[in-house]
Image (cartoon, rainbow, N blue to C red; front, side, top):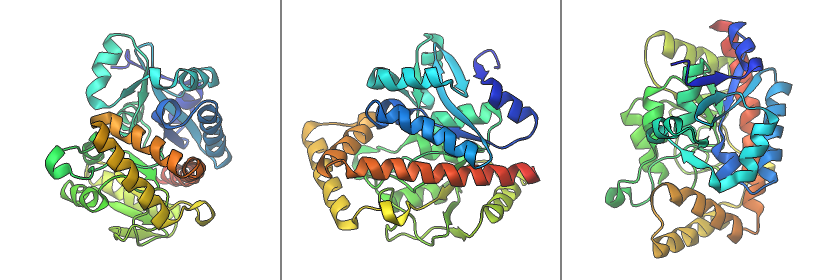
Length: 305
C-alpha cells in the first residue's frame, strides 16, 4: 500500500513524533476558486494551520501518487491547471493512480488518503450531501458514505446550502455519523450561520470535542464526525438573498441538464455570479475559520491519543 502513497517530509516527521496534523483538500484549489485566488487561499490556509500549532497536509494525486503534504510548487501547479485536473472521489482513485494522472481530491477521497497516512483531522469548506430532488435522481454525495466508514473528523461550515439539508442530516443519522455544532445548536448552511435544523450535540471547546472523538474511536465505533463550525458573523451572507441566488442557480442547472459531479461546481460558480462575487469572499473566510478550529482540535487530540 505504501508504494501508492507519498507523505511529505514535514508531515511524515510530525506523524512519527505524534504532533498534530491537519489534512486539507485540493478540489477547492482546482475546481472551487479561480486562479490566482485559489493558490493564495490554499497557501494562506496552510499558514493558518501552522500559526495555530499544527502541520498542514494538503492532499492530492500527482502523477498517480497519493500525496499527503504538497509542496508550494505542486499547489501552484494544481491552481494553474484548474478544471483540467480530474476531480477525484472514492470510485476514481484506482483509475487515476493506475493511469498515473493528476487528481484533485474531494472530501471523500481526502478522507481516504488522510486515513491511509494516519491523519485524523481534516478542514474543508462544506461537506457534500443529499441533493435536492434526490428522491427522483438518487444524487447523494459519496462524502456521506465516507463519513460513515472512515475515521477522520471533518471540520466544515456545515453542508453546502445548495443541498437538501434536512435529508442530509437524516442520512447521516441513519449511518451513525455525529453532527456536532461548535458553539452552535443549529447546523450552519455554509454561507449563513443558520439553517433551521438542529445539530446532534453542541460543544464549547476543542478539548471537549477531542475527548468525545477520542472515545468514539477507542470504542471501535468506526466512521467520521462532522464538526459544524459556523462562518464568522462578519462574513455571513444574507439568508434570504443567498437562498434566492441558490434557487435561481438550481433552475438554470435543471434547464441545462447539468447532473452528477458537475452540479456543485456549476451551482457555486452561478451563486458567485449572482451575488457579485460576495459568495467567494465568504467561502474563503469560512475555510480560514475551519482551518483554525481543525488545528486546535488536532492539537487537543494529539495530547490524549
